[in-house]
Length: 120
Image: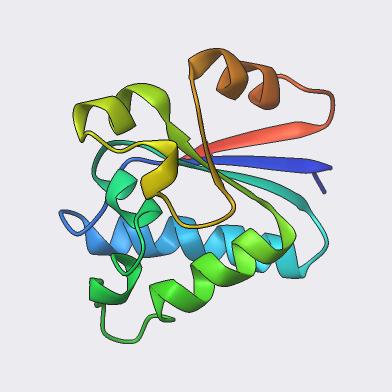
């Protein structure tokens, strides 16, 4: 099993199943004791804002706010710098515990010893 799992999710409400899969895999990995770093990019960027995860609905899927909460409790959630800028999202706007960082940090995490990267 990977020591660290880096997950980049690009989908949001535009591709709900792919989005839900990314959050579900991240939450299950955290619950399994894996070090998790979830990156919000593209349309998933909106879930860095308070209340936005509650607007997401997908039948037969775990509620996105619960998944996000569990990931934040045991892992790391990062909002892409460029994605945040395009949406005029700043550090003061995001859910507590979400950081904003760029591609260099993503590459460092994805290439770290024992890391496995997934893109949704």
